[in-house]
Length: 258
Image (cartoon, rainbow, N blue to C red):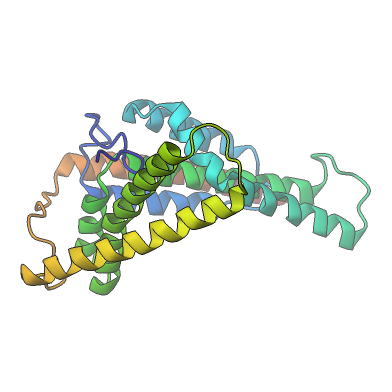
């Protein structure tokens, strides 16, 4: 089976793809912390944050349509968080205005922008690097070994579940052509149970095969990472651009307050 639903564009050749995964991990999470630390209600700086991220998307050559589709998965949760904060504050404090002049509405808008920009950065991170390379980078950055092994096994076993879903769907379609004449809930429930049982059986067989070959928590054949100076420079420039916007906005707010 060919699977490309997790790291579909990780094989592209772009300057972002060629950066060491350790550098990308540190840079992305540093930028997320900087953006999330922006003051509530400060909407204007996100224009510059968005421009920097848009430039990064352009350099990485990841299709914008793919990023937007991935964003749709978490969009309801971000929208709910951004909406509930101003609504609850307005109800409790008795505000009558729901426009952008309301500080609570501005705060909700910043929650929305922070959430989507952090999500886009994470999508870029996972789309420009193979997942096992990201795990290797996290190990080099002293991530707990047990957490790394669990993540690696989950990544590999998700393909087993996907394979069984394709097989059971093909078998169901061959036995019930056209529209279903019985309850859809019953059919899909039986299929879900079959997927779980078959996946459990296959995963146990695979794990026993790994043990028989001497698996001890380390995955053989993983490539070594070579940290290059230009990777560090590129990531540092990216972080400094975002940090400059953050500090500039803080200074403007301080002068305005004074």
